[in-house]
Length: 119
Image (cartoon, rainbow, N blue to C red; front, side, top):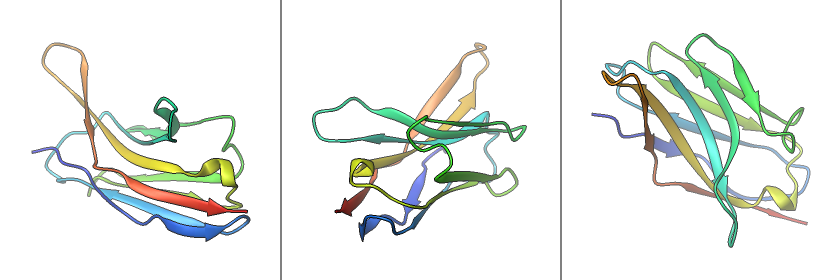
């Protein structure tokens, strides 16, 4: 069963920090874990992603401010967000990508957690 469960998020002022966490069943073999976000009226976009091998990808807008880390044993991924800006305000979704027998990966999503940054 793949069901990402997020925690963290909330309301902070610009310049402050937040940490998001996402957990999933440790029995699932993960291809990658990551975080996406969606602001009102905007498309969902990648924030950060970490592969099973530890390779990290960041959106340009968060590079140097956000840090993603993953625990492949317990299938936990965290996103440390520093120096938050009002434009970081969005619903953040945990993404778990699982390989399938077809050779393609399947995406599973958490329910989302709101991050609001006031100026």
